[in-house]
Length: 160
Image (cartoon, rainbow, N blue to C red; front, side, top):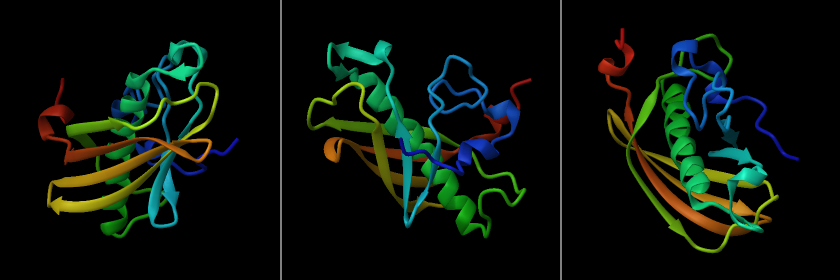
């Protein structure tokens, strides 16, 4: 079973680590973890039995959630690197929220198979990044998605 050793989500401060998809502190969440795989980003995930659409296949909402969190995590890790930092260097990375999410389901995604989301990141504006993601199960391309990730507004940070 492949895993992401160093993930951007590990660097998020506790106040921002609660996302149902990728928050490490959300006990009931998916705990998606995004890291580097060469020049692309990667998130690996093994869906659970309760993530089934029907016996043998993964619910599309899980795939959309994977693409969503992979996209925002990929934007964060890419901007962190652009700013001269790497994971684990003690500098808090930027945080992103989803501006838009597009998902194309290409083939039924088999259950009980590790999914691998690979992302290509492109800066499109100083505050927006586009991440194109492909999701594979057993080396078969099952879904493709695009996230436009936006730097998290200050209003999210000042929620108290």
